[in-house]
Length: 424
Image 1 (spheres, rainbow, N blue to C red):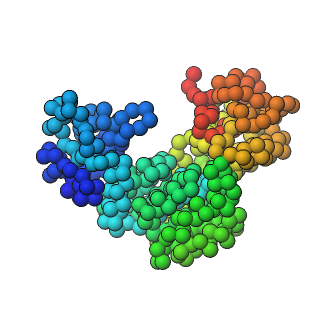
Image 2: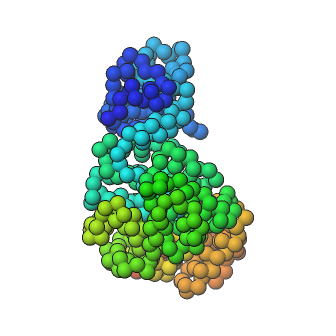
Image 3: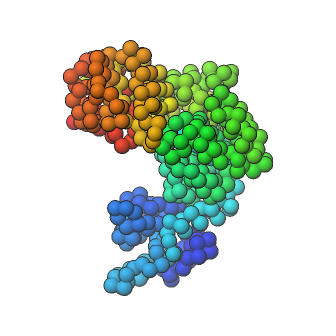
């Protein structure tokens, strides 16, 4: 529990009489997710203003609401003056400040996880492994930005032994900001690839951004890195604490691969599991506990989800994509039809990277490749169809699928390829 008095001290906030003596357990910023006793943070977004839902959130059970200092407008003041409110200059800034200060009160070992691909899967695997050792909190889903991560920290129980935080970035400086809030004790970098090349330009630029995590660890902390990764030496040199190197050649990988083969196949996922295991074992888990944690594991969201569709099996891996994750998925699925969506945020590298992925797909000898979106830059041809969107891709698929076919669906989030197999 966090007291309103603490919140006001951390954020320079002012609590009204209805709120001042209260405490709250966790934070939400979506009124649809309000649970009894939480703090509702009213944020102004591009499409709506969370202040519109303050009364609704309180009625749904929120202990109090964090609102702008100038809210409510004079015309509606009488309607809300009995609600428990904490007023601050800016709720988003206050949310970050509160998370930074609350983090200082936690006894939990905090682990930051970043990388060009595999962050969410690795975070989930690590959290399951650490839960075998002690109470563990983790970033929900992929809420890894400057809004989601502070919420994850504030939702960590004071008695948690571990907190695993996913850290995402697509612009320089974002990891540094997240680290300044989370103050992680350990860091895991899954890989360095061409995701967000539009903003980081080169692999060195990506490594410099991701490496900010391990560069800011405490002296008694540790960094977990892929010893075979293309930028291992760069990242190891950046680390301010000891480096725990792990990789696919480690003896432990055989057990991990066996445990994952049904629900999460692929060498890239074995590597994710090995990095998570190396981190968990450095924090006190045994190898047996780590392997046991994989039983029944399924990745969250639209990540390697087998779906029966018109007599075929579609692998829904549509959450997101970059060149490295595309190639890893193609190498893993072992099917005959690939539906590949345009990859975003590649900047000047877009043409080259789309061509690289397409060449890799064609080299696999697939029966058909359906390219979705305008990023591919090819006219189509034998075995290759180019369509503008998911609806057109679905129409093409229905012409060629047959019972027993296996289809890979993968593309950037904006492509919404999951709509192809949505319930009809």
